[in-house]
Image (cartoon, rainbow, N blue to C red; front, side):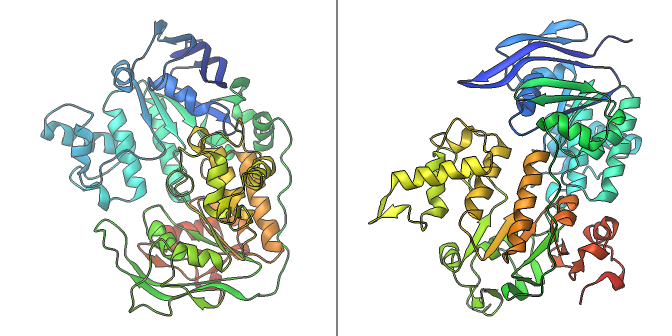
Amino acid sequence: MMAPLLSLRGISKSYGQIHANQAIDLDVAPQSIHAILGENGAGKSTLMKLIYGVEQPDDGEVVWEGNPLRLASPAEARRHGIGMVFQHFSLFETLTVLENIRLVVPGRKAELKERIRTLGREFGLEVDPLAHVHALSVGERQRVEIIRSLMTNPKLLILDEPTSVLPPQLVERLFDTLRRLRDGGVSILLISHKLEEIRAICDRATILRGGRVTGDVDPREHDAHDLARMMIGHDMPAPMAALPLSGGEKRLEIIGLDYQPDDPFAVPLSGISLAVRAGEILGIAGISGNGQSELAALISGETVLGRDQRDRIYMMGMDVGRLDAAARRTLGFAFVPEDRLGRGAVPEMSLVLNSLLTAHPLKLLRHGLVDGARARAFTDDCIRQYDVRTPGSDAEAGTLSGGNLQKFIVGREIMLSPKLLFLAQPTWGVDIGAASAIRSRLVALRNQGMAILVISEELEELFELCDSIQVLHHGQLSPPLTTRDTKPEEIGRYMIGAQASPEKVRI
């Protein structure tokens, strides 16, 4: 047995009354791919921040290559050979690949350019060093992030949800790269909620629950149900079946929408047409950066159409293209934005006050003043129904983990009982148990006659939820495809610009 590359002994970290990590023990072997699994709030992100030097532990010891180590910053972590690729990329879009890498890696331009190309060929991470980041696909941007970390010569590479932005065709390519990195001497710490992927790629998995280690296993010896049970402490409920419904009234219709944004780095939309009926869930798939945020802003009312674009967007039979977000909500529209902090919630405000942002029409105001008792009761009900892990309704939104804040925002919007519900990335960053609960709730609402539109980069989620799927690529939508007659690989072909089989297209 080789000595561990990294060992954590009794690592603890608290934020006030919240104990994020409690007496964590962890060993990462040389040349291994090691998964960290856990629910939202289990302590995964905090643990990675401690390893990468973003935070420092309150108690315990970090042992690196047999020697105690205390890291004061990520720069110091990189000097010791620890690199990290975050889920949300940290690249400047107006700079080239080479210019982004030079911000972290010293060296002459010609030398760095050649190293980028050499690493690309060696690990299947090919990318043009002189290309501007805004012109790259999401998969290419991820390669830039990994190359930048590799150029710091890491012995340990931390990856946070690396497949969440990739179509199926690129996931296996990434896995090939990770295996080659492992075989070349790099250890990898991998955070992922996709348990089948963990079983396919990882040599070891450590499970966290409530800030403590509850298991350390070889994931290849357990099925996904076993791993999920270890994570959440009980069996997963069976997914709710969608009931066959006849076509209801159109709650959302977009007809031949063209949109040219003012932002030169935004994606123009061309010929967008879709319809969502009562009792239907329509999913929109696509690689991030293909027009999802622009389309979401147009549907939600954040972006209002010009005077020359009438009769393009209808909700509940009314032309809403010139109506703002508040006016659309009065028609029975509710929206869960992709950006939790900033659009979905105000981080410095309490959960009670964040409830008022969209739920105030539910008698939470009296004579123009906030009814504190009703607002608190609504918030407490949302926390209870959606299992939001928080000290209470007075907690600031910014203190919640990303997954728990997502559960709160989803719950808040569902509790409005809308006729049309639009969710962008509904379970992004949410653990498997909570994601399953949210999806089951959405199917139940669909069965009750609600019209639901979902934008998601999780194909598994779309296939579990949706009656039909359309793919957004370079600002254009594919025809709607009936989910039960379509394979993920066909959706993946549309995502990268190819076409699916014509017989799968729903008329």
